[in-house]
Length: 153
Image (cartoon, rainbow, N blue to C red; front, side):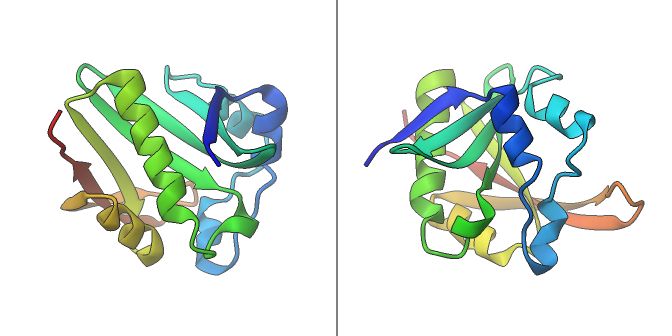
């Protein structure tokens, strides 16, 4: 079954802002406030897409474009994570980014504790570039891994 991408609606952004992940993955939770909903509705020129498989909303992708580069952000519905669906979901977003934006470079950043996501990204063809620290909303420092995808057009 194919994945379908559509620009995210306010109703869908509200749903996503209520998603809650278990354990350390709660780092990715939204706060369910107007700022989070506004972010999902593209305030900085990022384009958020809801992804459906059949009639089920299964996740979202964000594509931040700059010149010939696209940075990918994503989230899968919490109850679907850890069930072996990540690689297909991620590859669908990667293929969408390539066909829609035709970039020369695709990057992403992931918290280094998120080993299962890093494994998916590596299986999809991404390579580690560098680690960096970023301040979280609560003021704590979180280590991230920047990854890059290269392919032959």
